[in-house]
Length: 116
Image (cartoon, rainbow, N blue to C red; front, side, top):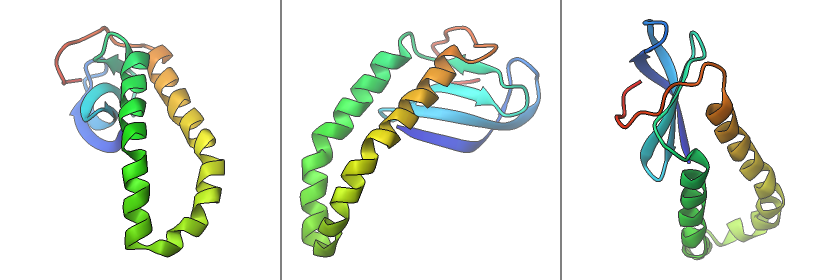
């Protein structure tokens, strides 16, 4: 999951060219939110299923990433218990952000293109 905070787009609702938050799941833009008026456009039929797929992909790469970190910087192993303890909080924040976009005020229509 990636959130881009400084994308400059023209809002479909208020017509103002300004900053938008873009939500990327599995390297594809799935939603955008206008910082000016709060209009949210969702470009996915099922945002929760897309988030679950993105999380599964990240989880499948996790053991390889840990092994790579351990070989490159062995001292990072000492920070893993802290990271493991805080990971559920990070996942809950991600899920709450997806929920806000899915149920947000003035939610846009389902669209197939990547433009807001």
